[in-house]
Image (cartoon, rainbow, N blue to C red; front, side, top):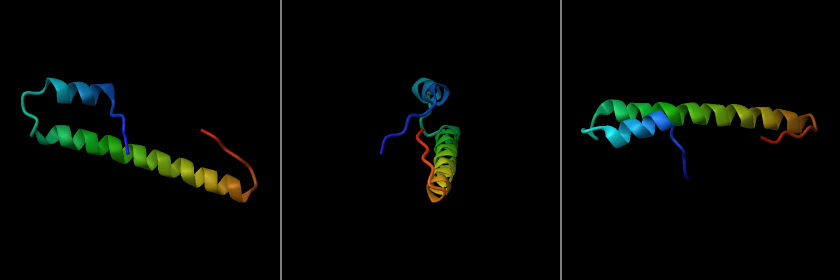
Length: 58
């Protein structure tokens, strides 16, 4: 699975002198969690609309 992280986070990773810095990991994890919440929310809406016999495409 491929994920695109934000430009800001990517720049933090590319310009850091310490790749083991915990903030780098936390920032990426926070972005992934937010993406999962957003996708989950959209899937719930899509399932609800399918139950109503509507269609939704993103």
